[in-house]
Amino acid sequence: MRGERGVVLLEVLAALMILGTAALALVELESAGLRATAATHDRELELTDVDRLMVAYTLLNRPELDQRLGDRTVGRYVVNVQRPGRDLYRIAVGSLITVVYKPAASDDKK
Image (tube, rainbow, N blue to C red; front, side, top):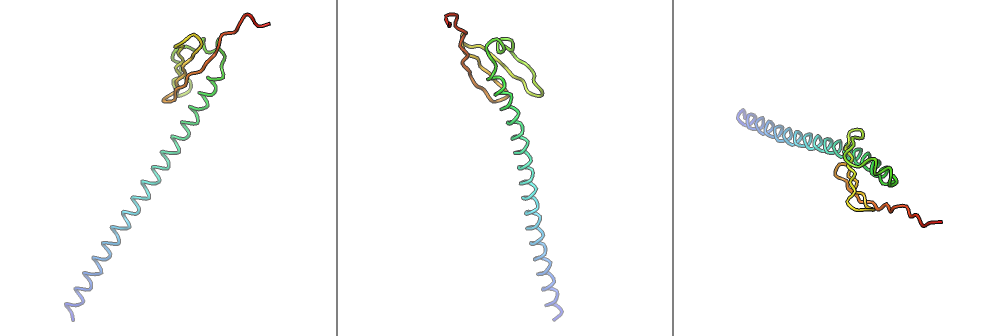
């Protein structure tokens, strides 16, 4: 009978060890999920800022874009404006790049 109690105690300890390991794994999984959520939120805020800058630059007219050719630091971002063609402007903010068409003002308009 006494040996039987010892075996039961070992079984209980083994069960507690298994449950503890499973609980630790769940806590680690939850922690990883929270870190991923925080990283996603930060990336979303960054993309929102980049999108605002991109919209602001695409709404500029030709003379304003000509004044901003090259690299320019705006906040924590570097905005690069290039003129690859006569009426084309390439605007890059971080990893977001677009090309906009800004035709020259026509002198024959009356």
